[in-house]
Amino acid sequence: MTEPTAGAASARIADALRVDILEGVLAPGERIRQEEVAERLGGSRLPVREALRVLAAEGLVELEPHKGARVPHLDRDEVEVLYRMRERLEPLALQLSRPNLSDLDLAEINRIQQRIEEGVSVPEFLHLDREFHMATYSGCRTDHLMSTIDRMWNATQHYRRAFMELAGAGRQWIVNAEHRLLLDAIQRADDDDAERYLSGHIRRTRKELITHPEIFGA
Amino acid sequence: MTEPTAGAASARIADALRVDILEGVLAPGERIRQEEVAERLGGSRLPVREALRVLAAEGLVELEPHKGARVPHLDRDEVEVLYRMRERLEPLALQLSRPNLSDLDLAEINRIQQRIEEGVSVPEFLHLDREFHMATYSGCRTDHLMSTIDRMWNATQHYRRAFMELAGAGRQWIVNAEHRLLLDAIQRADDDDAERYLSGHIRRTRKELITHPEIFGA
DNA sequence: ACTAGCCAGATTGGATCCAATATGACAAGA
DNA sequence: TCTTGTCATATTGGATCCAATCTGGCTAGT
Image (cartoon, rainbow over all chains, first blue to last red; front, side):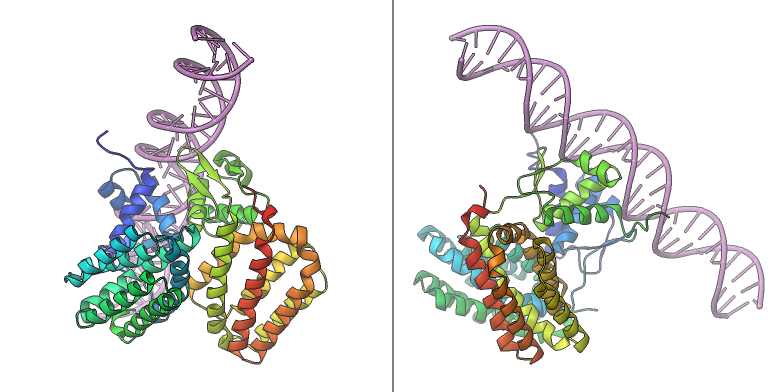
């Protein structure tokens, strides 16, 4: 086969649109026309419609009847609450994951952090930072918890990028320090410390984010 | 018009299917055939397909390519983690909601609890208990948080009903006591106490649930 | 000149038809 | 009798066509 056609076409289109939104190709407020997507990604409008419904259920787009799909604008309060949700949920995922992490997993997490410290561009950092945290949760096999965490990261991705692009460079050393402390606690199998460092990491990020009102357009 | 056709047909069908699943008309493991749903609820298969995609994104059904939709079976661990998620997220919703609750809101919450104490059937209790908690969160206007809480309640609804039907009757007084303590803390505007009572309430429910392995089929 | 109403184009929502895949029964051989 | 391969049927996935609704520009009237 020339194409693996992994799964259904609607799933493939949903994935492609999700990537476009997360990478900022589609910015908040931007209109998404079904026909344009259909011809860009190949296929008819039908799987595009299904993909948009799925993305709407995930909170990545908002649908208004007969008016079409848009990437939603989040205000400062919404993003702040999403970070408060992360502060509470991700330590739970870490607690469930940590006992299942193998030495191989820990080496992989180390490797990711090393690449971050070697200096990377903003898009690369966003990708690797997510890889880092998700790797620490990889021992957690609970679907609902992991998909909820994915959703929270997805919903805030745009604002994380906006923040990094305008103020992130000078604060990189803090992220690295927090990641190292977190990783050390994980390797020491100290769940209490790990949870503390993790929630602190998210909490500090939240506080820095909301001090930049220019990130939140409308 | 005979029917207001509130919103789109696909949304209407998704709502109807959601109700069927939450009320136990469709049990875990049960197959959902598109054609049957289409003719039962009126309309063609197309909006049914879109509705199923939406429900799949919400975790209420699982779709396998070319094999159709089923109501998913949750195992004991998955339900336990969903309750642990509730223990962490719902106190946040309460904390954000409480300052916005009016005296009218509080009276409404009281009224709901009174109806619960007057003695109700299992389906009525499930409905009113949800009404009670959601009313305490009604001052929280954050979409992502509230939709996440909705999802957690939806995913666990079937197991809550199974538990109530086999062991719930004798424990009703505990629920009432916890609700009253929670409500009192809310009325005293004591957020710390309210969060403590709420997380304790959810935690106790979780512990009782997982001691009944017969609830979890597979 | 400005506003209100209307009409045409564009876009989404829904129905029907066709293709691809899974399911289950039945027959043939060991 | 049990297993295995094959084929008919049922069911889902995708494409195309038609209807309903929104958007923007234009005209007419004040």
